[in-house]
Amino acid sequence: MKIFFSYLSCRKRGAGIFFLFSVIFFVVFYLYGLPAEAVLYAAWICSFLGALLLIPDFLHFRKKQIQLQRVCREVGITLEHLPQASRGTEELYQELLEELFWQKRQCMDDSRSRYQELLEYYTIWVHQVKTPIAAMGLILQREDTPFSRDVRQELSRIQQYVDMVLAVLRLDSDSSDYVIREYDLDDLIRQAVRKYASQFIAKKLRLIYEPVGIRVVTDEKWLVFVLEQILSNALKYTKSGSIRIMAEEPRTLCIQDTGIGIAPEDLPRIFEKGYTGYNGRRDKKASGIGLYLCRRILDRLGHGLSAESEAGRGTTIRIDFWQQELEVE
Image (cartoon, rainbow, N blue to C red):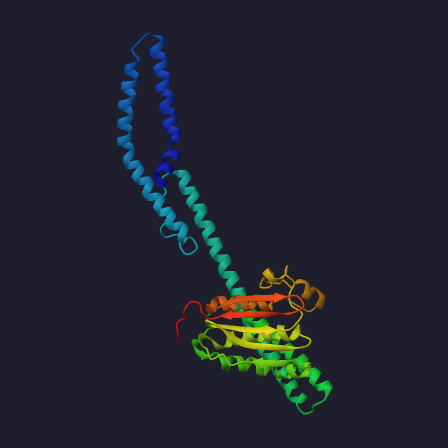
């Protein structure tokens, strides 16, 4: 029906001219005292014959509309199904469309090529930077002093930022970097906790860890990265008290801290890219990238992410594994 009304809209000029001529004939016949019924009869016959002649034209118009709709859905891929132009103006429009399409394709290819080069460069850079970081870590292990512990903590922070750079690049990569399997969630939690064990000790924070006993279908590397980011935030904004890791029904992991919390006006936006909120502006070191990456990664893994907080009383981050099922490799 939409195509039919579109056809009438395209042919309204011809219909208007026919109606105008009929009115002119009717007025002339009336002024000369001739029977107006003759005009109406002729107009009815012409309308009937015109409708019969317009049926093939409508079918051709309908076919072209369907082809154009198909092209609109596939224009980012191919112009193979573009209908044959029937007039000079349509041919010019098609030439313009094809030229724009190939220009767009060329720009996309160039952009993809530059992005791939950038990804390869920073991937190499990250692996090169990891070597001196690891070497510095080994050197610092030779002594156990307040100074060496502080340097190790800052070195761990550098390592985290390097991993974040690599995560940002790989998230938008065309290549698949996911290995989906079934894992014991407790094993992944322990990996993240071990990384920050020294910071728990240095800040004298109590870790309350209750084994969750949940098996999840996920990607180990990416989920551990998310857990590390959440623990890092909890440690960063918790000066005293504890950080608790536990499970909630039906299949939800909770990471709860007793830190400074999040302002109510900031809470709805903490997963936005680059948003730091009041705490980040006061700290002057927040990038607003960590939780944004967590949300994007968990969306791709089919897991849910939410936050609950009260300023001055702490924050609870929940990862919901009761989401869509992922295919196990």
